[in-house]
Image (tube, rainbow, N blue to C red):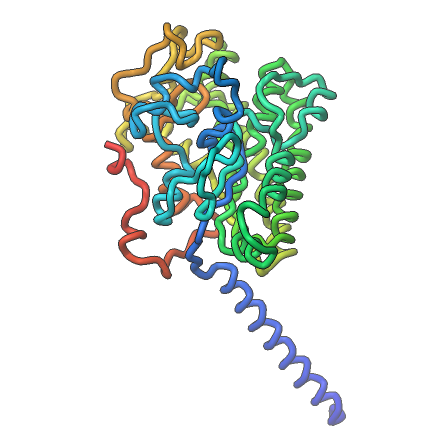
Length: 395
């Protein structure tokens, strides 16, 4: 027969277990609860840049993306976006009924109360000095993720009035952390580094992303959307650079380079593992993985289903070669013309996507199934939820 105190001990233990379980469930529900975001704070590279690199450029020596046909579809003039129109962050802002997020660098009298964008085309997750120490030299920009985060912290006195106001702003913002890291790999591949050498960068890139998220959590960040990489093997710049007569190098369904896409899957798997680790460390924070890879790959797998041409690997705006891409004749140059109907193309300039493709990627993230965990929009008005990004909005 068990002594009375042993029975009491078992009862207390069972009660403690139930309380712990309920606390865990409530905490989990709090992470996934619907949030009505008041602004968007963005970091990243050219896929999220809404004009930062243009703002940093010499007005007397403007870069190629400052000229038509960039921006022709929606804005009807170049805006510094690397597309014919809107990019993913624009569709997210529209879905949340927020203004398009203005670029931070070079902006004059911009209103950042509803959002601010630090993403710069050519930005890397790792510092330029580190990459150059590994023989990865590039001329584009020195605005790494660390520099963007420093700019954000230094700008807080202008963005919000007091420390409590700043914390409230960060807490109620959707923080878009990327896409970032793809440019690190691009530079490494394009200067001739082997895939083994580039693979060594993956853990360091992910550590840089994780460290930035952790720092922003300490500043009050509650909701992070962290994209993975795009399927690099479907990009016209890589299909041109690594063109081969060996048909086994290509995916028979899409025509994309299989080995490069497997590299992207490797990056994404390591990123998701790190995000899962962070989520366990910070259960009060919502860390959402955005599966850019599969949100885009599905279009290459079934292009006609989404209104694109069959085998849409060629660039809309480019010239030369089987993929309408030549590195020394970039979109925006006088001799390069855009296609007549960008909505039929996935790739815009050989590196970035068309507005039509970005719209579908955004829809896949916001409405599913390419966000993990999925967003909960139950608290938003039906008008906003029904007004999400779709291909119909860009026709």
